[in-house]
Length: 191
Length: 64
Image 1 (cartoon, rainbow over the protein chains, first blue to last red):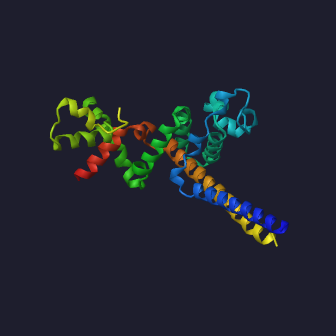
Image 2: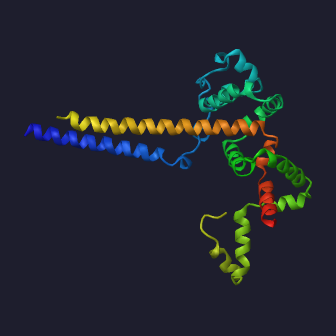
Image 3: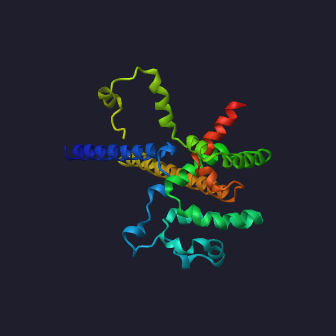
């Protein structure tokens, strides 16, 4: 009897373990659903200034310190994953061309100061418009120059979020309801 | 006897943890690579922060 009860308890425990493992694996499966580590890990120092994420500035090698010098002032505020990211970039630095090294140094601070969301957006846009073969790079630079030369009004129109544009397009199709009904037609949760 | 049950469960847990860790590392490596490319790119970072530029490019490409 006791053996039977123990066996049942063990089976239950193992089922729970297997379920936990399944959840863990499923959670890891879709990479795009999991927020990048930069977003997940907020800088702990903000809440607990005494806890510093590793490695602290003094623990970096002299070469790393030299490369990452523009980040020195903000280094201790970065999360561990951001620090690992910068250390990885510092490892690539010696293999970069001189003009690329110059750009990295110039952009380090501004990149580090962007919000995680802005960095995520920039990465996504880079993947969609920036990843081009060398022969098309020149063209992209020209297009950027052309875009910058556009009048501010035209740029502002292009900068309108696509959601608003879509709703604007939808509006003329439907008969314009009286003002009292217009409010009801707005989907819930919209500002 | 109970080892027959524990070992497969342990295998599942360890495999799950290993897959999760591997995926995290892959993601970090990908982020690092893109960051390095963005930081060295001949276009300024502002170009990739500008929603209007992306919209304008799409418009240009669609017009061709």
